[in-house]
Length: 391
Image 1 (cartoon, helix red, strand yellow):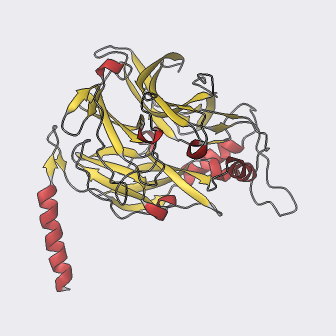
Image 2: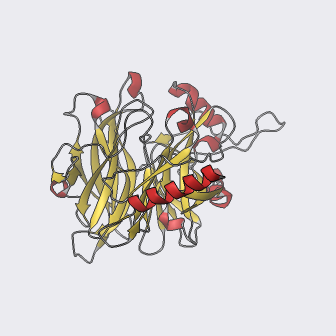
Image 3: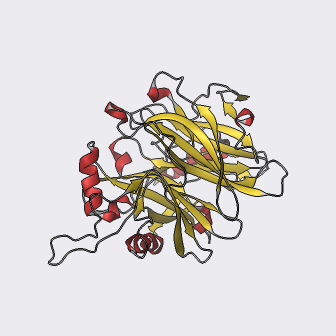
């Protein structure tokens, strides 16, 4: 009991020492997940939409889940690799327990799906929405924001960060990182207006050292902070951060990168989190700003990273980042599966709770084997959701 009291006192001292204030004067201190629960209702909505065969050219499954709330109350959902076509119910007699898709079901590199203000998933906007560049190179959409077309402008547009990847071999069977782009979509019709390259990484010889930005974005004041990560093949990777004035996401010359000491245009960025061993991020991660504190969600380091979501916190996007906090293990389908890409969705959050998605895939190094499992069980390649509280 005495040990517990001493620990609590020490914890309060540490907390008091770490408490800071951000530029806006909001108190900043340790934040972590205090409780969570599976959001079966939202997960079920996506299952029903994916199983609906009323259209043959719409979404039946995808990963790389991101979303952005639109000014009129709709929510635009963005996915990377996406299955289209039809979904078949489990056959009878029993022996196949899951809905399934044809092994030759069409797959595109990205898609966009609209959710109505009511929360009903309405339709697949386009698949793909962002065309391949050609020569074995494609685009994966990541984080998106609604912002003025230019600072102070009345017209608003949707800016979507894109990762371009090129076909590769060996450890890069899912593509070699190539560049970060920004797509501009018009409102309210979501027409693709322009594509702009922000950061070309082809001049970096080692693909593991290339950094792609846009895994997540956070707004604070006049700035949008854009987080990115390297493409190292280790389970624990490094996180990086850039910033750009709101309204200028599509202007490469206005991007500033944290170099370890200050924000600089055109600088070689320095990692803000990641020691290559116990502390760091997965291939994709999410960040939110809550009560003056930045909270980062990622898959845990080591073998736990296949199933467990953990978090870090900081008073500044550039850190220092504290953690990892105790993680939680969300529900997963049966089999040799892995969870990845935890992302917050402000457009469907509320009531003091934050909705977090995570993608699920079959864990196998051979793409053909993994694809066979994804065809046999459509639940493996659809987003799942949890609702959590930070405290």
